[in-house]
Length: 385
Image (cartoon, rainbow, N blue to C red; front, side, top):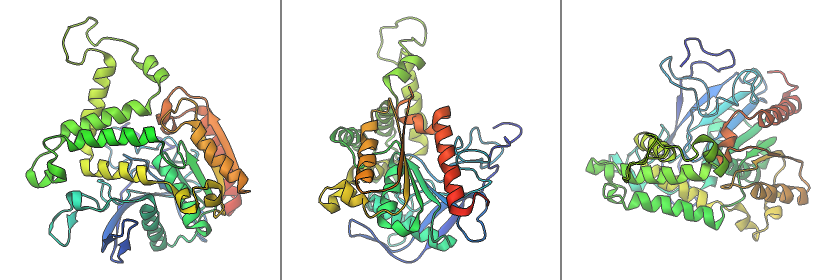
């Protein structure tokens, strides 16, 4: 954390928790009788409540999208690149809401929360979520905040899937949908990656079928392996070659099975860090929500018919070296929107950074994002907060 908070930062932020007593019926048929959602807000809601923007997070994201929780923070929220004064989502103009989804492990009700029926942590008994369940809960939070219509709903990766679901589930409640590095459904390869990651966790002897909290253990090795695999898929070959090449940690071969290459050391570091902050049951259910997402399935597998329900404008963004959510998948969305006669802008950004590019300060990406959000402000509330 710098000694002085940057001028383009939203500054020090305190999360808020909203409790809901109204039962939420899930796609699975199960019911959450009560639940909490933790969220942060940045900027000020204008008088007619027309400048609100919802941020939907990806698999391992949470509510802390921008700013700092304390002066001791080593780095800001996960999307600080794009949220703040003068940034693409300009908090001098927009009132931004970012929440941790149900099933998360950062303060919203999830597997680590206490099940009121048992007095113990939900663990693996917490219901598997679908993207539509998250959107329903987000709509309830919007109701509490008095936001009838979002100026924009924005998200990358799994967050982009939530944006798509918003456009077809609550078409009257958003004016703009910004879908970044996402897809209309997962490919078989992506589902396979998720299953390998889940199996790495499930086969860890400390997993105990998801009851590791009760057993006082942590499936750290499995979660590390899952994260290492996932991290590989978020980077491109070019990015890994430029960052690591075949560099050795000690400049020589040791003829051992310990990490010797820089890339091995990096993956171990990322896995170790992730395993200490993220819940394994949450990882399991988040990846399942990714697998299940396929809104066109309810419309004869016709994406055009599915998206014809939308009434908002769209910005769709992809990145050239993103092979996890390749540009072709974004173009499926774009083509379906065009055939459904919807207003859509599309940009494919040149980048060596793979899927992680949507989190990075790539100039052309930020310029396009900024220009589109300026248009959102102009069309939604005249560009003034």
